[in-house]
Each structure stands twice: as C-alpha cells, then as structure tokens.
Image 1 (cartoon, rainbow, N blue to C red):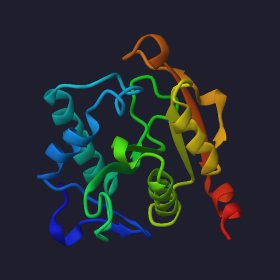
Image 2 (image 1 turned 90 degrees about the vertical axis):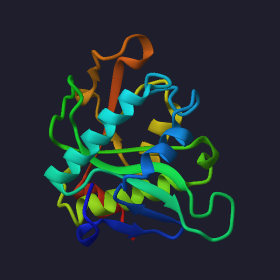
Image 3 (image 1 turned 45 degrees about the vertical axis):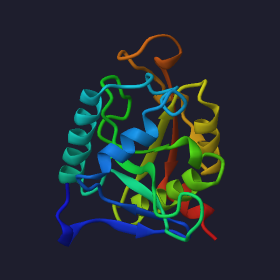
Length: 195
C-alpha cells in the first residue's frame, strides 16, 4: 500500500482512480466476488485468492509505481455515488504463460451494478492516457477469452487492435477459460486517436 504522501489519485468526469487502502478489500470482495463478475475469471474465489491478489497488487505498485487502481464513482448523490465500483488500471504482464511478460497490461473488473453505464470505458481511457503519458508505456496490451464479448468489445472501442500473435494458452485454467486472446495499442496509435 502506498503512503499518503505519494498516493496516486486521478479524476475523470464521473470517477476517481486511486491507490488501494487497507479497508478497500472487504468492499471489493463483497461487490465483485460474485458468479456474474467472476464468470470469465475462474468463478467465485476464496479469501486466500484475494490475499494473494492484494499482495501482487502491492508488489506491482512498489516495483513499477502503478498497478490496478480502485475505481470509485464520485459522490454526486446518485446511484452508487461515492462507492467502490471495482478496479481498472495498469500492471505488467505476469500470467505464467503470458506472451508479453513484463510489458504494460490494462485490465478492469467492475461490480455488476456498474455495468452498462460506460464506467469501464471511462476508467480504461484514463488508464491508457496515464500509461502513455505519466508512465511512458510504448505499448499497452489487454487480454481476455473469446467468450467474454463485453471485454473484447470494449478493447475494440478503446482503439486497441487484435494481436493474435500474442494469444496464449493459460495453463492455470481449462476449457473455455484457457484460450487467451490479446489486444494491443501503441503510443503512436493512441496519439493518432486523440482529438
């Protein structure tokens, strides 16, 4: 966990992206460890899974200065105002079979009540901007599985291009969860999309 003096915080029109705090994990687990949210991520997980996840996020943040950030809706008095929606941000490719090990990877996971409202796209656009500007990423990758249509559709809406040469088989899973498809966006491609 980052100390208060160096804590990351970025605001978009409706959202706050920020570093994790110790008290965030119970809310994150309660809102996202559900059959719907975890459908393409191996199903509902136990506490040990999230302890390891928190440790990995903290290690990534300590080593690279960034990781997946908490996504909160700004407190505007509306539905979900001020509440944690999930996470979005940048880590480094580290799946055991990853084809772009150590390179920038964007990812997101939002609670079901936040789906269909454009929050994932808003958080992901901010994360891409931060990746290419603040963290000097030359290219940012994203992965999902073929069946997760909402995920790869968002990647395409973000201007990412399908990169089948980076697809890989994730040995941690079986069946439809093992075939991983990759998308990528270079800094030059991102810059050409900016108004």
